[in-house]
Image (cartoon, rainbow, N blue to C red; front, side, top):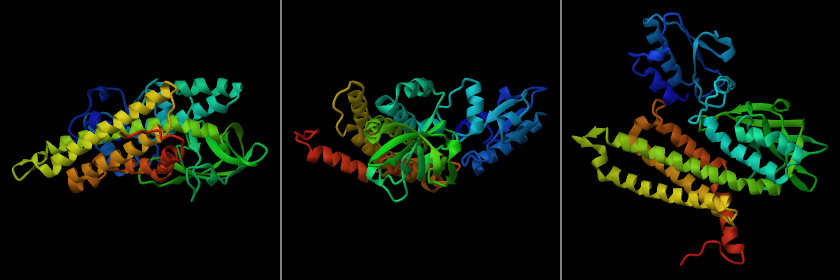
Length: 389
């Protein structure tokens, strides 16, 4: 359950009503918050939990907080407060056969899983495909790409981690959910080539990193870690198209939700005796960004359709991700201006969209790299991919 859903469904924000499904003469309530989760352990969710405990206590229902699912009494009604891909959330949700589509796990692991699937299809052995593809497709297994290095770019020339005799030594930065995924997909230099390897998280050292997006990112140190080669760098380049298209869809959805929040507040907030949405200084920027969001949606659809039908993709995936991520960031900037100072507080969701939009733009194939990819396709090819009449 994400923070907004938790506040909504428990009515903890008001602290005066309690969800009827939590009530029962003999049933207790267990609230699971993993202290390693930077979002669920932050101030607003912690405050909401205290409000919920107080409201339940007034009704004679005991609510206790536990750091793990298996620490809670099995007869209790359980609430998992999760802002990231934490072990406790995944444990209870998997056991209950419940998906978590609104959580950062579902969003941030999409590129890793799509990339892992495509890499296995492009270069994996029959045994590797048989072992991992069904699990990835079903959601049973998750991969996270460990490919960025400090001071480097997104290309193979920046890879300094080394692989020798199926062992990897080096360091990767900003690896999403490295503490909970089943395998890390690691790029490493193997002689004169750059290969992709599968590494178990238990064989590496993890250091949690604080990010502007408040998500679960880690720096990963490999010290002669066992590794299983699956493909060459070309397979990663090909897999990146799927991830870029997925990220473009993520950015488009994020921008649309940002616009919805902005419009709702603009039609709710009164100033000078009228709704602030009636002022041109607010209405016009919102109308402009709505148009750009639709443009990004069409570009994303074109890239996805082209890829799905096996047609020449060219720079479409790079264009889609670069443009939609830029629109997402600018939509959150406008949203912050609509909300004013309150938009920067942790109690308001706009700040989280603002954070995620900026990190999405920079972390997954940053704009300068994508610009070079697009320029090379348009200027260095025999024929430009995009023809402007």
